[in-house]
Length: 267
Image (cartoon, rainbow, N blue to C red):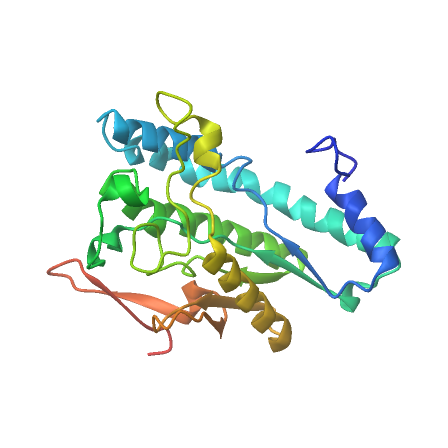
């Protein structure tokens, strides 16, 4: 609110919201924030890809020790953004109960299950440039930590929370039915991929955006204040569940093998 323009030909996002709120009836405001701030997802992904291409070793040991601190530093900023958005809506004549303010988490575009794809063409072809261990850390640790931070911010500000941490499970880059794009490389620019190329990569494709739309539609109709969304049955259709995944499921770990199995938290 009151900040500088992100793009020269566009209004500050809060000003754009204020205008729309006065001229149309807003039913839901969606906030997806934080990944490119303290977490620096773009630079981290660029470094991880570069290390893979140059055979410099996995990036997890470099980023894992300070990752939770990044999340902790991000939470109060997201909380303030939620409060600012509520202020914009109040100034436009809305009571807090007149619309739904949704803080949405983000799914991991990468994961270790791509080798289950019977038609796996190789990382170079599908754009899954990274060490397998980094995909495990990204999906199972880095993204869930971010989600827990967003959940905390939503709870403290009264926003609705949508946990999408598992939305792309089974649909990551290089899987049989990916909902995210792999690494984009501009062949007109020789050398290693730059940060902008990586920034344009690892984002939802058309099916991924359709999954977001389905989850948000279900959330709006449900009236829930906290929910999770995923394609748990691999049907290609995401399903909404009450509560966040940390409450809906608990990992059941085999002490001998270390393998985990998701079970209902109530059992």
